[in-house]
Length: 204
Image (cartoon, rainbow, N blue to C red; front, side, top):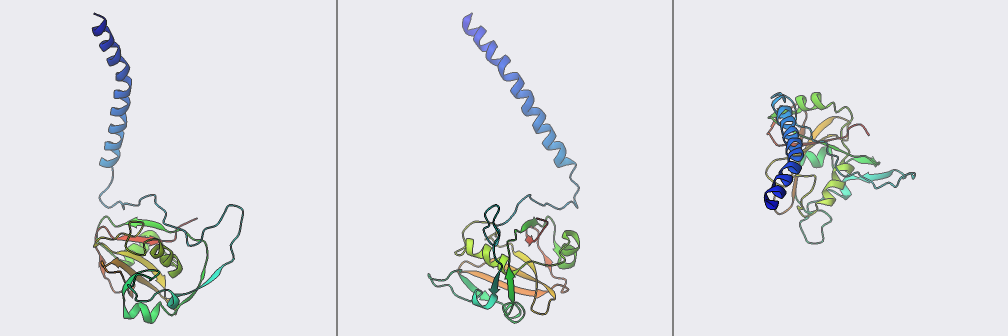
């Protein structure tokens, strides 16, 4: 009889936990059902900042010279293994001089295929991302390690202003031997596939 009593007591103790779990599960399921098909999937994720800044301290802005960083190099000593740089990227973006400041990037994952204009309109990207921000992310995954940049077949894209101040899109993929970096005009109506990661500078 004592064993039966203990078993009953344990069941009574477990009931509140079971009820709480069912309530949480039901809320989660309801939230997922209420998601509209057109609602974007925007994880609450921030990518690495360009510069590390301790609380209460300021950091002097630095000049970032793109051509000194973005070079095709897949040797073991490369700071970042880059196997290919597109002609447009080299002509319009690698010639830039930027002021590198402390900026964090947000990540938006495309739930459905979308083109450049639609992405810019939805996320609101007036100023674009710095090449210095992109380079910082590449340094953290110099050899294709896991991180904010995805290393599967889906692209990572950044909206960046070129040396003339025009907004363009820079796409980054891990090709196995190294990173492949290209660029294209924002108005070329290219459709990016579902799963593409968009990196952009949001509100601090």
